Amino acid sequence: MSRILSKSIWYLYLLECANGAYYAGITTDVAARFAAHQSGKGARYTRANPPLRIVGQAAYANRSAASKAEWQLKQLSREAKPGFFSSGDRDPDPTTGAL
Image 1 (tube, rainbow, N blue to C red):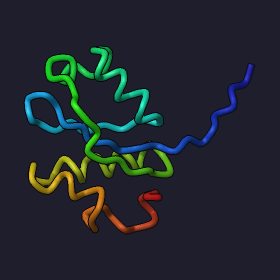
Image 2: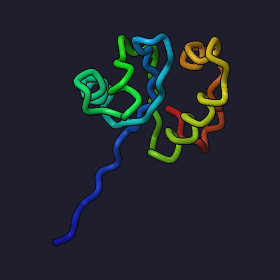
Image 3: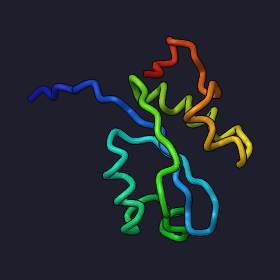
């Protein structure tokens, strides 16, 4: 039986956790992933430090592009991370798949 893979839009998201830290990740459904983190079924880090809110999110054409953007985000200082979603900090190169 063949499996048809659909092209999904991937999202990079940034959460603010109860301890004041930021947590970044990628997913195809930000709302569902946030709910998983809040319920303790997400990443190990968010089980210990529950997320309070979604700080920002950005859409990408594929998982690879979202992963590259996640790496870019994680290179920024804590203070610069929220601005990643509203400024030119994201790579404007269309070959990266940013939407």
